[in-house]
Amino acid sequence: MLRILKFFALAILITGFSAKAIAQVSATATSSATIVTPITIANQANMNFGNIAVNSSAGTVVLPAAAAPARTVTGGCTLPATAGTVSSARFNVTGQTGYTYAITLPASASLTGPGAPMTANAFVSSPTVALGGVLTGGAQLLYVGATLNVGASQTAGAYTTGAAFTVTVNYN
Amino acid sequence: MKQISKFFALAIVMVAFSASALSQVSATATASATIITPIAIANAGDMNFGNIAVSTAPGTVVLPATLAPTRTVTGGCTLPATTGTVSAAAFTVTGQTGFTYSITLPASASLTGPGTPMTANAFVSTPTVLAGGLLTAGTQTLYVGATLNVAAAQTAGVYTTAAAFTVTVNYN
Image (cartoon, rainbow over all chains, first blue to last red; front, top):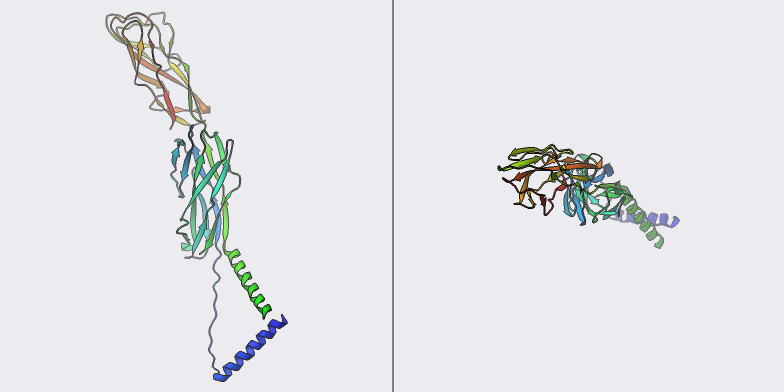
């Protein structure tokens, strides 16, 4: 520490000396800093794929990232008229008005229940990861959907994630 | 000089670390899905039009879709006091409690015996095709009736369907 102080003292001396050599003038400037509102993200709703009918073929249920998601299916999955609760996950992102932010989604999540665990993957969001979000008005709703992989003759019952999946946002 | 370098390096590391720790935030959500019990249908009783008396005029026997069907006749058919076994076809439909299902009935069936084959058509069901079924408590008995077309002076004897007719149910 003492040596650092010595260094600064020396630096000041040198500066002072060189300034003197050319004619000393001064000007002032203000110094400003803006502390931006920290970005925050809060869960407002969980993801629910709703009711799914299965048969002896494996299939998938695609849940888009939207306020009122319309599911689509492939393979052996069908969607009964009694849809159950169908919802994308919803997060409220807040921060500095007008700022943009990056979104990081999970790669996959495991849903466990009475039968073999099912994997949710191909997570998508609105706004998309590719475009990122913008905090118009200082807040934005972030919806997250995914694709559920259902096994052939998947055992009936309710399945849910043992560990909640994580969505991360950060200022660009 | 080396110690000064270390000091600045340390300072830069600290600044970089604290900046990223402050701005990146995460939230979690759970994902859920409900696999519904597959729908099933099992025969619980065959259709029987019972004993029918004929004349020189053709006629029909209408068998309603109920637990204890009361037959009606048109044309040359009459119903003797000894009715024989009279029953609508019965099926047990099982699946997810509270779910509704659609019913598909055959267009016609051919009953073969000692005389010319007779056609059963105008199939009806309880619950009706129009209203569809409801799996209150996860099960429902589905009755199926039909109209038998009897020819003039139809040869006496037992007539039965060579190939059983098919009733199909599916979740709405």
